Image (tube, rainbow, N blue to C red):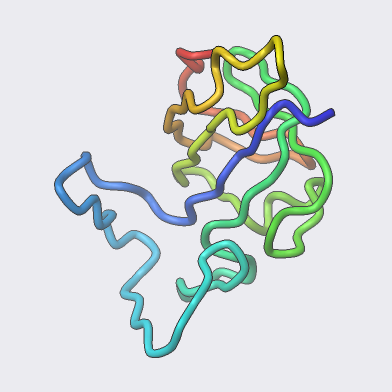
Length: 129
């Protein structure tokens, strides 16, 4: 059973501000039609969805194991097509059951150091695991 959901943010975020618009590292984006960031790619040079989400199968101190297929159709074993070093990811616990639900809704943002197959290595250890 997957542990949670890893939402992929395909840009480098600027320090949090009222609008957190990013750093522009992926280039300018012009949106001229309705888009779904979980399924569509907007940034030039990206071939996968900008906000692709994956189920998480394992969490280490600074690693995250992905499983299944992302919301944009990318296999977890090919996560490097969705993620790159320097990307920020949102880890959020979206699941619980009748007895294990105290951490549902907990989240943190982390920066990707590298991606190998279905394993994402983060720059810093996670704080809320």
